[in-house]
Image 1 (spheres, rainbow, N blue to C red):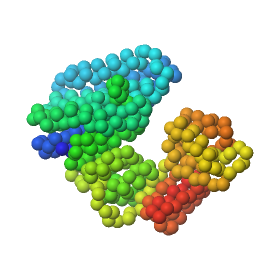
Image 2: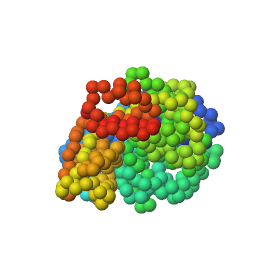
Image 3: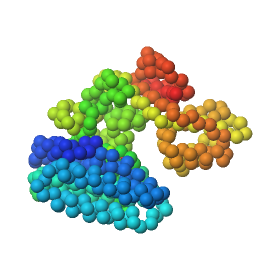
Image 4: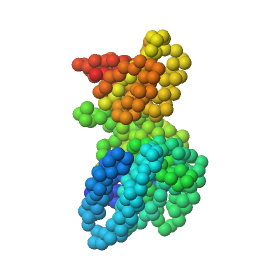
Length: 422
Ligand code: ASP
Ligand code: MG
């Protein structure tokens, strides 16, 4: 069996859904398939706004939820089924559940409510697509990932209980796929559930990770991530017009790239696949016949320089207030404050008198971190910083990249250079 994953961009409109249909139709009908799908288009962002309104300004809710409905209805209409009442009814049942949540008071636990509200995106997309496919004769069964991927209660970044998830997935999905009724299971990316069946999410862009979980547990032959790019590129074509596609790369290299922020694959995706040596394909959903990129246990054939640009970074420098040196005790305390605030460090560096970190500028989170650190430390920070990571660099390449930029921090290892620039 194989696992296919479709991201939000690949199903953002009716053409996208039809394209998914075409890809499923052209796969060998005897082969078992688990299809993992994200919320359509930018639904997750919209639901984040819904949640914000739910907490801070309920007057905005009617308009936001109307947009949510309309985005889904538009796709259904444009799919031009003779009779779309089944899909509409199912979607409306889900909208009614969401309305019910939003009509009640929030719990006061923002992250818990986040998962409760934002998980609706994937429930909507998969219900729409699964029902549509059954209507047009692509037989499939819908499975609820909230009951299959078991996580702890760390809302918004659920930690997967592999043992329980394996049992649940085998019992449900394994069983469907063994039978002859249907060879395709459609399920949601990004979401899971606690033992009390409360919805959780696995972190933004977590659908790739979901695909890896299903693949690992079911011992899939391969995973294919269908994307709006030709494959894994050595740079973001927005910054680098002559980005090139990487034909094949080893797991370790892909893990490094994902870790440094190449946004094509969610960083947690690769390790489980590597452990079972399941190859991962990244393929263009508009050109399924193209080879895309293959990530596997093979050796690296060519050291193509890879560029990863992360914008909207903040560089925070932390100094003991008494101007003493940075010692292990300080670091211990600083790390625990960072960890309590759930901040991911993209780069860190220490000197005698300060410790610096570079991280994504997530508005409320960074303010809170700085406030917490300021109790015992002097904190300076720069906003609007860029973090550039180059794998397989040469001095020439570095010089070209930093031309006309101020370099605030630089770190080099044999294969990687990281530059914090302004
Ligand atoms: N829909 C979720 C998000 O936008 C998960 C995903 O797309 O992978 O973050
Ligand atoms: Mg997405």
